[in-house]
Length: 119
Image (cartoon, rainbow, N blue to C red; front, side, top):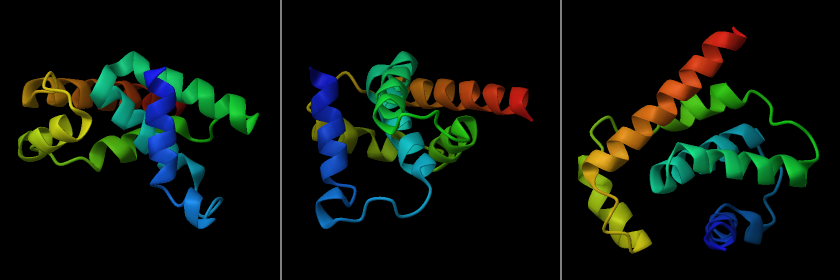
């Protein structure tokens, strides 16, 4: 499945091959991966990432809304300048500037809504 490839590719680039597991808050990586999934595949895709993380961790994700907000705000406000690079890297010409901006903003709005309801 395409998701398995995306997760394995992400894990390969995040210190796992260097034996750096467990450094820092897991939420920052989870939020980043969820944001990447939402940008690439839409808001519902971030739920698949969460399901897999919680299944493997055998526990609920901590402070999920907070880390999702952090991830979304870590993207540039003007997403246009790297939209081409994202599309090229993924071989996805459908990932236009407008689509990436809409998906990022939807991910952020959802996270802020969840953060507000927990606060």
